[in-house]
Image 1 (cartoon, rainbow, N blue to C red):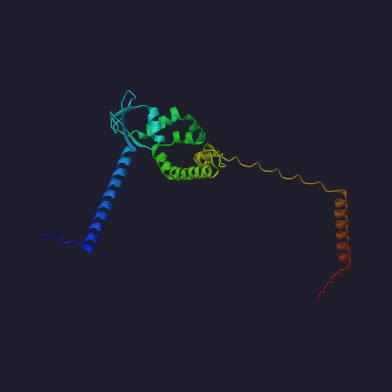
Image 2 (cartoon, one colour; image 1 turned 135 degrees about the horizontal axis):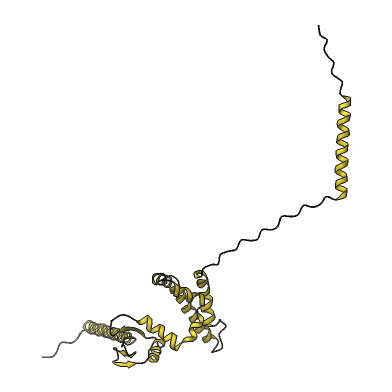
Length: 233
């Protein structure tokens, strides 16, 4: 008995189903690839008391220079103290800057560093969350502008100022706002003007006026009639 012929509708449905399965499998493969890439881009590192670092993600020991290289390549990392299980990522990143990238410290104004040392932990945390997030976003935008200009000029030196100059321009107003203002000294009072001596002409004019007033008073007194005395009855 011959097999039933496949109709056009059945053939179209099978093709549509196969295509849908292919799309789902491809999407699942891309998602797995992205998850694998994201997993590779994140490192879990343990620090031991002998200053040795162990990458638990790749099961290998690391040096501080290698950790710096991973950060520059775009890896996210989390460093845990092997003894206390405390998160010391910020301390390790600071150590990288202090030991391997000391030139970047020149971008930080001295008043800002002094105020950070003097401030307590909570104020520093609030300050970082309030100002540095915005400064970092502006810095990333600035970096993108530099890269775009380099691409347009085919590798010519950019017209933008250096990163160090940009950082100082961003942080110096913050540092000056944190620095205590010196007490303003009161402005010296201007001395009172010395009384000017009367000139000889002015003195003569005053004497003439006084003399004329006296003469007018005398004439007025002379013109007044004498009062008559009443006769007694």
